[in-house]
Length: 261
Ligand SMILES: Nc1ncnc2c1ncn2[C@@H]1O[C@H](COP(=O)(O)OP(=O)(O)OP(=O)(O)O)[C@@H](O)[C@H]1O
Image (spheres, rainbow, N blue to C red):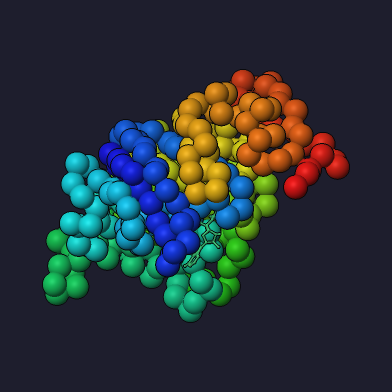
């Protein structure tokens, strides 16, 4: 689905990301983890084409990312930022309709009627009853659900999420991840997500890519990457790694007063 080779980014003389190689195949869910400032968002910006690399290349479905025009790219890949949607005066339904932008012709119309699709997504995300509400009248968690709806309406094959659960309470974090998982199970989309919560990452992602100071420090299944040694080395905390009693995923427990610089 997406491949990066020797990918790098520098701002002026300052290297931010260097030598990133990855190959994500169709239907996989990858998590990008790493400390603050390690280059996670920068990597997402390069993979989504928002920023251009200063070294290496990205190819999407075998074609150089830079050769896609905006609409063609949006028909394959959708990006959901950490901030989600701004609280504007648009209604929920209007925002979802905007998600169909990549499919509009030059007259600003779409060949197929997207209303049934939008209705189905409203139901799926439990947004029935909110359709005519303005975004300014929703909570942050509700707005994030609308943001997810907007990218679902786009019907992408690749979904890129940059810390999508940062502003959500634990219930909404889990609900958000569950919804993405359900979407993936039903439609086979590929997902790449930057996640700070290692325990959620371990439960939802097939593979984790660890960034440290702009370089790939490890790639593997959660149980291969979330070891005490790795966590200690990368995050500089003393962790205890336990196995989740329900699903066997590695879970990181932290101990007070165990950080060092
Ligand atoms: N436009 C820019 N110009 C210069 N430096 C930048 C720019 N964007 C990011 N950086 C720097 O690049 C480094 C990586 O930033 P990035 O946002 O990719 O990290 P991150 O891993 O996503 O961090 P966080 O976990 O804090 O969100 C940081 O040191 C940041 O200051």
